[in-house]
Image 1: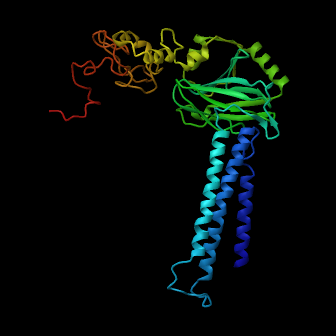
Image 2 (image 1 turned 120 degrees about the horizontal axis):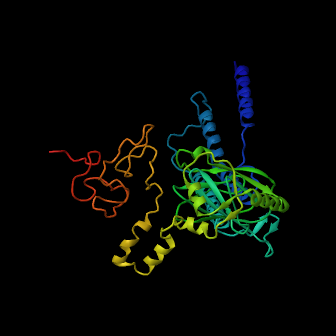
Image 3 (image 1 turned 90 degrees about the vertical axis):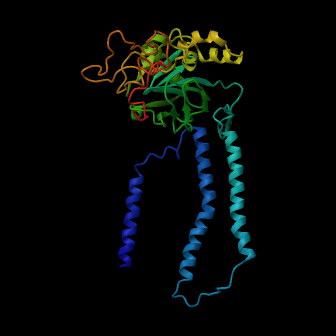
Length: 393
């Protein structure tokens, strides 16, 4: 029986190793210096914690075996209650590990700050003053990634390339919900949020094609929100830029507004020209004509506001792309101001003569999004049944 148990254990371990052989442990075997330092941080933290965990587990098993009921030779002392030597060991070891972990955390938090420009290419090569970084502007869309190269004047969808051993400065934003920009072989994940800009400094040290994706659930097409990162030589990068310029179409505001619409599993797309100021307009939520840019609004607030004159800016400050005249997938009154989407057409059509346009009330005055065309939303009636939770008389 013992031999059979040993055989079963060995077979189980072999099956486990075979299963793990198919795993892509890119986080523990990255190709970028920042990701390597993050991997080292994981290893150091695990080792420091195992210094306590392993002895505790071993001693637990030892005490359970040594002081078993059948072992009559074990010393039994029911009056024992204190040992200074044991107390020092029990508290000194964890305290030392906490101090070590605290020191490692403090140093790595500052050293691996994603906003901090790189000071080295790898462990053996520092960044020299002659080293020129490359800037890549990242926009998270539904459900695809847009990459703009301001220095090269190009843009791509779901494909990114950069020369190896060259510092990269990512400027990251989004157009709708929050996403997370993540290339495991390059560096850690950074969130992409509309109206905000985050940054990531990283470097790729090995040529190859690496997987990138959104690490934050963002809706229906989230599973297909993936892209490829190409780490290439300087000559290869120049060739890639020339290819994008030759094969790509222009990317202006009209083209971007079409691209911004929700779509899933979008193929790689090249744009050989990019309209000046497009990324700043995306960041400030003012790509559409007539919209007020966020930095303009913040400037007005900084100057003390515009008072009653700011009422005319109300429609210019409606940024959410869901508040449109188009039908939404399954969106119904009163949330959007339009009927539900169906195969036969709109299920909730507004009768002629009534106010059905989003953003307009019954008296023609502008209303807040989600308050259009409903009695009770103009202050003259009661809320619709699905919103009125009060008991009817």
